[in-house]
Length: 132
Picture 1 (tube, rainbow, N blue to C red):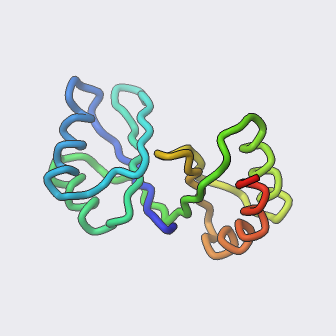
Picture 2: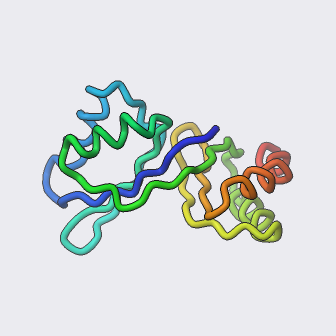
């Protein structure tokens, strides 16, 4: 599946995530994945959705800043020890330098790099290993 990872700078205050999540709901956007990390005096969100335009609008509506937007692929992987190592080793051996990686809902791996077409091609070779 193709999706978009939005890197968002937001204030680290009570309710900053709630504000964003509520706006996403009002815009009828499903959050496919999310990560939040404190950074200096703020917070960095990685937000995964499939609707680029509506997500950008929702982020703007709450006053947060998109610092990076990356097209990514989202693929199911088996939930067992060692799987991430197997998958990422094969991608590295195929010459893929990942720039974005995290797990999303339903044991799906989010992967991004500078050349998403090359990533998709490499993933086709890796997919059989990821689902064993």
